[in-house]
Structures are given as C-alpha cells and as structure tokens.
Length: 301
Image 1: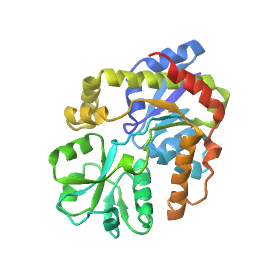
Image 2: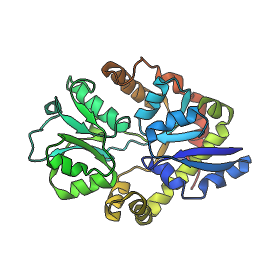
Image 3: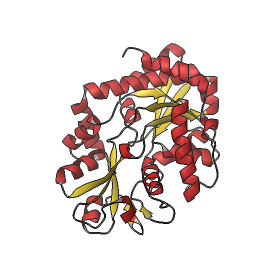
C-alpha cells in the first residue's frame, strides 16, 4: 500500500517532510511506502481526502471545520503547539485604524478559508462585530504587493505571515493590531479520512513520527530550510529564517482540549454564516488515536 500525504506551502511540517526521507523510513517497517501529492491551496485538503487523492493532510484551524461542514468524514490526528507569533493583522501605523472596532466597514486582505479567517472572525466577534457583515474580506491575488495596498489605503488591514510578515516588521511602517496568539492558538492541524485512521492507526502514528523528525530537522538546519523556502516561494532567506524561528516545531496528539478550541471556532463561523450548519466537532475526534500518536511523538529523534 502507498500512503499519500497532501503537501502545500502553508503547512511547514509537511512542506519540509516532502523533501526528506523520513516518511519512507518510518513506513517501511509496516510494509508501506509513502508518496506526496503537491497542491497550492490548503483549503482543498478536505476535498482531496474525501476523493481519496490523499490519505492524510495538514492545514491551519479553519479548513478541517469547513471540510466537516461540507460533509467530509475526517478525524483529527495531531496538532502543533500554539503558534503565537505565526501571523499578525497589520495596519498602517500612520493610518486611522487604532482598534479592531475601527475595521467596521473596511476591507481586510487575508487568505480566506485559512486560519486567518478564524483569527479575524474571532477578533471581530469579541468586539461585537461580524465577519459576515461588518468587514469585506479580500483574497490576495497572485503577484499583488499587499504591503503596498496597505500603504495606498486600498485596504485597511492585512493578515500577514511567514517571510512577508518578517519583511513588514522590518520596515517599521506597519503596526500589529493583533498577533495570532492574542486571539487564537493558531495550531497547525493534521487530519485524515476516518476509514484510514481507524483501520491503520499504526500508519498514522508512523506519519506523526516522520513529521516530528522533519520538524527537528528544520530546527537543526534553519539556514538551509530558509534558503529552500526563499528559492521556491520567494522572499528573502533572512526573512524566512526569522519566520521559521518563531514557530514551535512541536507536535501533540489531538486531545479534547483542542477539540474545544475548534468547537468555539465552528460556533463563531456558524453565527456569521461562514459555515451553513451547526457542527459537533467531537464527531471528528478519535480518542483511540491519542495514545499511539503520543507514543510516536515521544520517540527519540
């Protein structure tokens, strides 16, 4: 059997695992081989799982919720530790937006459907505002300079991450209206089809070990990892190194505590119309996976 993992640039653990030999090394004792399916848009992960294109994928907090709302039968396998400095909602330091409430009626550019939707929706919700009614979420188009759009007043806010955020922080023109850690835990989230996870928990555990090894490789080789990202994804290697350095590179089982975080997000999404139904996130929790995944993550690298 070949086990296929979905890979896109927005999930750093999978992005680097796809360039390392660890998946095959961990699967070999189980008589399995690994493969990677590369795609650009992480919000498609749930659909790719449902279609059988991939067996296992990873995103931020929002895509598994929207996948569950679409009727896809998935289960959570593992999560990263919180990523408080992974991203930030930026505004022009000299501009009129001083608080989240000042965003009412404004346009905010973000990766709609990613963890960034969770960040903005919860921040607005805390101020009595609605993601669905009180702001205009704008998707970034390929090749657009979001920093320049913010300077020009075309948008009032920009949720940035990675090398773009590191570059924006260096420039001194922008203010961080909110950091991710002030609003959400912003975990990297790994999930699989229910049939795959329930029938082959030992394979899920092996994948978790491979991911942990990939994370450890990045920690030990940050300059090399940054150079890879700069060459393939654009941006300066120094900015990528700054972006990689603030990530926790630590994985955990998907526990009931994490499920509660996702339930809060799903309830807000339902209230603002981002999903069209009330969800029970516990349906995607498979407690039987916690022990084998925890054991896999505890292995020495």
